[in-house]
Length: 310
Image (tube, rainbow, N blue to C red; front, side, top):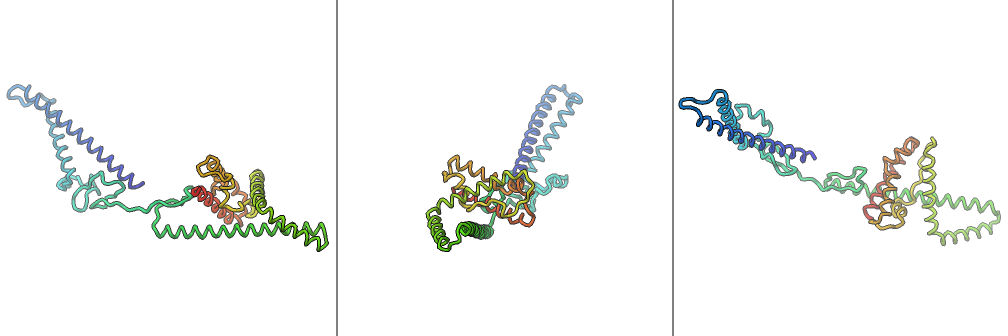
């Protein structure tokens, strides 16, 4: 943007210089015509007609000198420095005494002797809202990709741990309920066997139940905004699998479908770091704030990756 602004400024200066040269040329032409007419209409032995002739001659001389200065300026002659021209052009005069071309190539800068075009690395990044896009070298790109892979592995491990912990909690709850209903060991073993068979047959529906519970807990969190109760890390209803969040919310719709885009915008309103911090940040416990916001950022990035991949 800096290069574009500098180039635009130089081009505006060149345009103004050309307009000024054109105006001076027109003034010189008009003055010459007036002087010739005065010469032809003056009586013999009379140089002019008073003040009018003086002004016409002065305009002709002044505009002629201005045209000569403009011609010398365009060719970078240093002879004008003694008249203060160097103070006017300043750094625009190069080290070898030649003025640079004002137009220059786009995106170039004048280093004192020639135009220099800086090579820029290609733009890269995924999460546009968070500021992942920018000029990167090959080494920076490699480090960023390695960092993103490590972060994705970390959050996948966190999700597996959450799922294992939730599964253990449900299993213990079922066991406590079964132990209350019957104290018979045979009945307990039978019930456990039946529960295992039922769990294996309903594994697909269990996954749907997790997502349904997630949506239910999120609705409860939204309803609790009016209260002043504090929020811990475990109070936030995290998605069972962040990489499947967009697919689940859009009901497996295609990337170009309206349902897919609407689901993406709705989830960004929920999980964008700034939106989340504005709605729930004041209620977060200080001990859990950093951990919560880190996972919110991870969910937002997973949404952007899922949207880009379709």
